[in-house]
Amino acid sequence: MTPMPDSLDATWTHAWARLLAGARGRGDPFHQGVLANAAGEGPQARYAVLRAVDPGGGTVAFHTDRRSPKCAQLLADPRVAWCFFGHGEQVRLAGTVQLHLDDAEADAAWAASRRSARQNYAGRNAPGSAVHEPGEGGPPGLGAPPLDDAGLALARAHFAFARITVASLDWLSLSATGHVRARFERAGDGWHSTWLTP
Ligand SMILES: Cc1cc2nc3c(=O)[nH]c(=O)nc-3n(C[C@H](O)[C@H](O)[C@H](O)COP(=O)(O)O)c2cc1C
Image 1 (cartoon, rainbow, N blue to C red):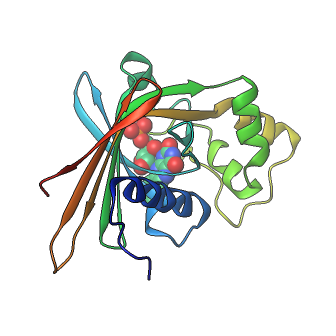
Image 2 (cartoon, helix red, strand yellow):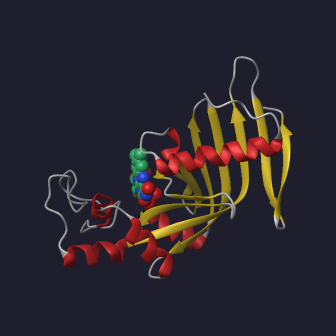
């Protein structure tokens, strides 16, 4: 069992370790979190998989289909919140997202992604398109043959790498012996940290 951190510095390291473990492990509860943003039609929230974590730079990242409604929303307003829960702990990230479409960062993320993950971007339709049949226009299922070169090129053309520069991290630990909460806010080159009433 991971010991509970007993200082703000240890809490900072602990929270980022949770995120790093989430990005590494499909079975980890921090592998996906609820990503929220503000859109003209109101608040939007959906799960996204945590794909990359850089504690030094204070960034996290997800992959998405550039045709999805969230991309247009995030281009209009890049502010996001991303909320994770597991191991009795909640981590709330807030920051701004930068979408990488056809640059070296997106290429590197695409090159590092599994073939099966690339299939997610091979759907004929934009995510959220209204259709007549269940699943119509979406990515090929697991039983489908692997994408050929043309299919891969099309999938890559739909792929986006989204990096979030974290502005604040709020950590909450739930415990029968007493809840504990800490907040970290980016301040210049460093981070301002404080305990909060849970
Ligand atoms: C567990 C889980 C993980 C998901 N991961 C992602 C993801 O990493 N990227 C993504 O774009 N959509 C992901 N989705 C689908 C989104 O939740 C959402 O349905 C889709 O992206 C369309 O969102 P939008 O209409 O807000 O653009 C995931 C859904 C679930 C249930």
